[in-house]
Structure formats: C-alpha cells, structure tokens
Length: 195
Image (cartoon, rainbow, N blue to C red):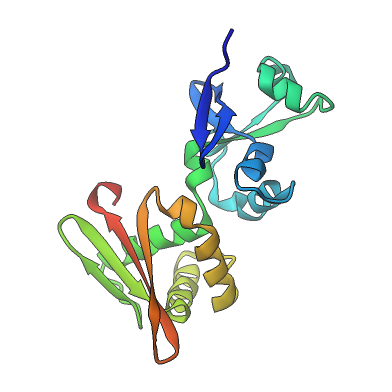
C-alpha cells in the first residue's frame, strides 16, 4: 500500500488523519521548520491557553495512535499520550490571535495610538511600528484579562519574523526597509474572506 504523501514547507511528509482531519506531530513540525527537537512542544506548552482541545489539538491515547503506522514507527518507544495538532491549531499563534482581537476591537470602535488601520471593502490594512503594536496588545490584554507572551518590542519583532509562514495563511506581510524616525514600518493586510 502506498503512503499518502503531502508537501508542507517544500518537504514531503506522510499525511496523518485523525477523526477525519489532517493532523501533525510536534516532531514533524520541528523537522519541517528545521528547528531543534522539542521546539514545537515547548511552543505548544507556552501557547496552550490560546488553543482549544479537540478543535486545535487532540491528546491521543496510545491504544489509538498505535494504529497509525507512520506514528507507531516514529514513536515506537512511547506508550503514553501523543498530541496531534490540527491544521487550525498549527496555524494559530498568539500573534495571529492578538491581531484578530485587534481587528475585532477596531471594528467595535476602539482606537489604538500609533497604529494605522484602514478597513476597505475587500481587506483590512494595519500599518505599525512594533512598539505601537506592543502597546495595543498590552491594552487588549487588560481589556480581555488575558496575558500575552510579547514582553518587549524585540520579542514581538522576533515573533513576527518567526510567524511569517503562519501569517501567510491569513495575512500578507510587508516590512518597509526605509525607517521613519529610526523605526521600521510594518504592514499587514488581511483579505475580507478571512475577517
């Protein structure tokens, strides 16, 4: 029987389906993004509060995942639960979560200092300097009584850079190489069908 091979990030991987939807393991994510083993699991543990079990991820007992050949081969030494991320969970990141909150708050009339947000018929455009986006996220944290992982403008910048692959599913991203008052201007555009 031929394996069901798909391509993610220009790499071929065996497709895993669980409960009728494609899923991915932490090990696969680390390999696909060429990261140190354990990076995806650490990120998941940090951001788990943004994810919904049985929608964004599944905790799968051994008796179920051992039936999936490619998983059984990869995790032969394990006999406990394994976490499968759904596509929705894989694409969800704190950055995207907060950007969606930002747009929702803007559409409900909230204004954010230093951010240019323009809602057109077919897209929303957000232009920002990282320091202003961080201030907006801090306000949203207080408004919604939730915590965000972006403690400094540098950590937010790093998260933006590390999330470019994830952003492209919902947003298009542009960074202006020309700095204004010593700060780079970033632009994110979200198409109307993704509102």
